[in-house]
Image (cartoon, rainbow, N blue to C red; front, side, top):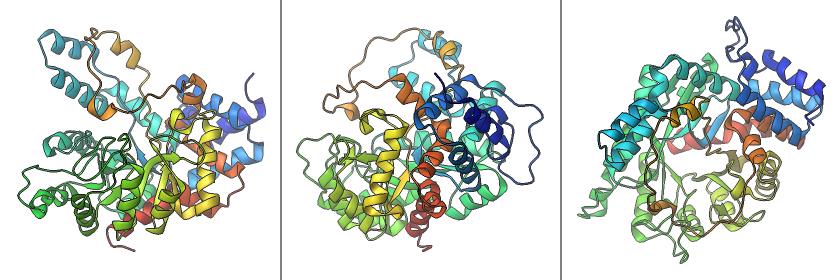
Length: 441
């Protein structure tokens, strides 16, 4: 049983209100030329139908929410640009030639993060996913997990390369004004976040050790994780059972990020580290992609005292689209419940949406079949965390697909929030904190 036909018709008809899968050639710009011919994407439509069946919005809420989404500046607080399919034959050739594990991993990432630049089919689907989601900007994961500057710079280079080659469609934003300009012009953009504080680990002095924070800021990084799951020299990550908190060096790192203009992010930090980072920060800081421990306690969630401490800085928590972190049904309905919990308890100024998911090209399966199987590898250091027996469902994952962003707005309309509240949640709060980090507010 699928959602009533009148709502499906309204959703598809809303191509005049919002770029949808069936109207993927349309643009946000008021004066843009409409697509000559609608393009159908069965993956996007399937995911939307799953979400509609869960939300069951009224005709009024659906149409109103889609219109509001189209008119709003939508800023994903932490996520990933749509991913291209790999070039299976090229990767298989590299493996056959004896490529190392690191080389294979780098090739995989480079292809998924840049192949749409030169491959026409991947470019078409890349653009289609952006337009279907109705997102102006993504706070883009642009740093491989870790702290070594050479490790961190790889993803930064890939997304710099992509935005250098696609400026008319997807540019790199250096300031919130750049994001706002892209929105006004009907373009898309990336605001870049690194997955760690870059450290040379020479330990000459704290000032020497933290000097790459400014260098990476100059390269475009605007947010950094304090920790990534495990313990580092700044503090304990969320997967550490000791929950020891922020180190003295971590306080120095928070101070330097505040000084330079980099947003402090504790999404992957332990609860005590998150709490102490919030108390140490003199500017608004965030947990960019997390959930509420009060609704489901998970190491990647944040309890009320941490959320309150983040809110006290003027920052926000970004609710993510990971079913096992949301638990319950783990679907779009549960996702909206987590957002509503923060709004109702801490206020609409302190919540955003940091999806932490990406659209994957429909060509991925075909290309992956060309790649020979690799031997089983050991668990990554960053993935060493307690067993999580939760089993998600295909429906939950599909309902939270990145291209379902317009339905996230519809879900907030269903909850009865005002237009101003919703605009803050879907983008305004990220813009405000981004401006504050640079001293613009």
